[in-house]
Image 1 (cartoon, helix red, strand yellow):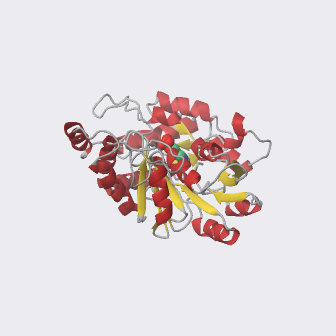
Image 2: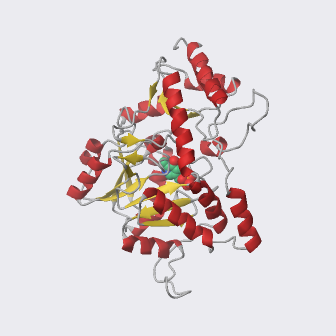
Image 3: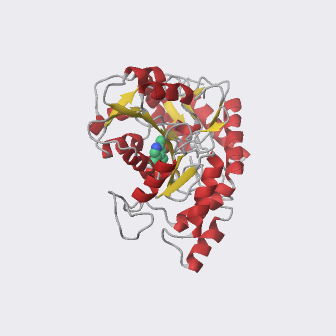
Length: 384
Ligand SMILES: *Cc1c(COP(=O)(O)O)cnc(C)c1O
């Protein structure tokens, strides 16, 4: 995935001005090193250890969820609750076509069928009206995806789910810290999933978390992520399980990150405001979250003017020392999910969307270089 490239730390602080400003670079300047050394020194490096419970408590505290269950990546943080909610062959799950592929793959991995729905212009989120149109007698669940730090219209989606008897799993991989009406995303549905990949708001290297208020579901998640072993009797396996456990080392990094979550979010929100103000005169359209949404601004993303050659613009910005990244391709264009159905809004966002450098340690000087590079690259195409 392009995210792997984004997370490579290239462009060290203090190096020449022409070093590439990456789209993302994790900030590990807090207690990360001390906590990892503590794991090594104590030999608690595997999936038992005090940091796991402490990191789970930190994420439960940050989101307001009753339970937080740590797992080894954001993808299994989706697959595990889908499996534990009982989804399987013959069931349909409604998911936006415009999303990262893990949302769709995890539905297919249960044997259920992903059913694509359209996104909305403006906030780029799953369109509740289109969701309603796609419900059939086989529909069992909806997976809203909170992309780039924005939030889906959860009141509308939860109302549909209640009325039609559907489960809701929120893919909040990109939205740790985002609130809607003051409530954290990931806590509206039956469960919510977060990713802690290297370019996510909080990182553990690879990691994920499932949050839920449902005691029974939380117990099932804990059992199934550990090979289905009984929670009270060792080597007694009662149900089909997986090894989806997080290591204590990852949780140690995550705890140190979570301690600084308010500072990380404040930094990201500050440069999101900067970009929006500095580029207000350009013919670009930033993702516009719904009223009442306080975006975590995971990756500041915008639509280029129609007719822009995105490849050329990205190459020119890269020449100027600024890495950018295209948004996701729509899932219905991928070979394994290919469909001739049209999703015009999702296709338009996918074709014109661009994400700007959005890591917490961006300096004012770097922000300025990004906006000048975008300005110049647009002008070169007569779009400035
Ligand atoms: C990152 C991401 C995931 C998967 O997370 P991994 O930790 O990379 O497995 C799932 N959904 C979305 C929308 C993501 O951005």
